[in-house]
Amino acid sequence: MRSATTETDMAKPFASSADMAPKTESFEILADGVYALTAEGDPNVGAIEGEDFLVCFEARATPAAARDWLARLREHCSKPVKYLVLTHYHAVRVLGASAFDAEHIVASSMTRGLIEERGQEDWASEYGRMPRLFKEPDGITGLTWPTRIFDDNVTIELGGDRGRIELQFCGRGHTAGDIIAWHGKSRTMFAGDLVEAEAALYTGDAFHFDWATGTLDKVKSYRAENIVGGRGAIARGLPATDAAIEQTRAFLNGMIAHVGAAHRRGGTLREAFEATHAALSPQFGRWPIFEHCLPFDVQRLWDEYDGIDWPRIWTMERDREVWAQLQD
Ligand SMILES: [Zn+2]
Image 1 (cartoon, helix red, strand yellow):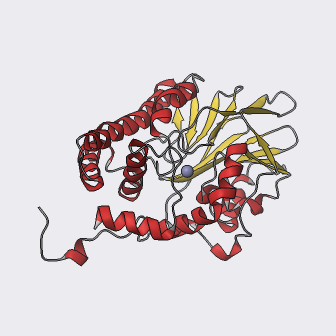
Image 2 (tube, rainbow, N blue to C red):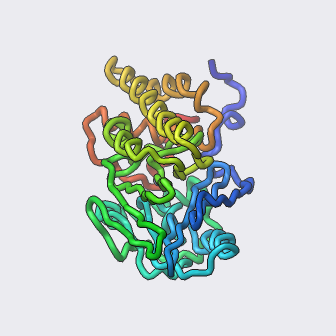
């Protein structure tokens, strides 16, 4: 039951717009020349050393935020960044790209298409949802465009005895164009937002049914010893990497069960949201950005049940409409 008294006081702040508390960052060395930085549920980044160069994964939301990460990385390695790999198109992971001075910016061809189609809207939407990540937003030089694209997979030879990095499209998931990066020598995977370790999933642009089945099966088939997911702690050791994948799948399957049930019985979007929120809160409610993500997640899955295959574009206006419909 809702109290009639303080509607304004009870309304949740939009998305993460009120979350301005800085996070503690953890720099980790996973193997010789394999680095990652996590930040209590903020987007993770990483890097792998080649013999003469660095490969960096994800670019953060702004060049200033990227420079903070690079300063930490430069305490361990001074090689130039030859490749900046983007696992997908979301603004908080790509708009800092100019700070890397990378020779090549690598992404899937589908990711390039999504930047073309909705990059500008996504920038505005994500800035509104999570302003804290956009340190010195005026420093963004424009949309980030990949300079090298591929459809299914591509290999980066690291030189010396450092092995290689395989970039692989595993199926539609968090977006239509996510890729993972696999370093077989250290059995490390940078999974982008396809896997989250104890952080809520953002599925507003996702393909829930593909992601929860074939895509995660393919990710799991690598038997990674380390998984750097999109957010949350690094999973280390096979039991932990399997757990991170299965937590991700459980979140998706929980949404599929409860949104699906509401849709089948002819319920409303709001009923689907409330049932899903109640069902997922005990297991996932304390994870970072759960409250932020769930309205957008439920809306997208509802669309999938309505037969809308291609995710609708989020704009600042549509963000606020969905939020007001479900959270106020
Ligand atoms: Zn994402």
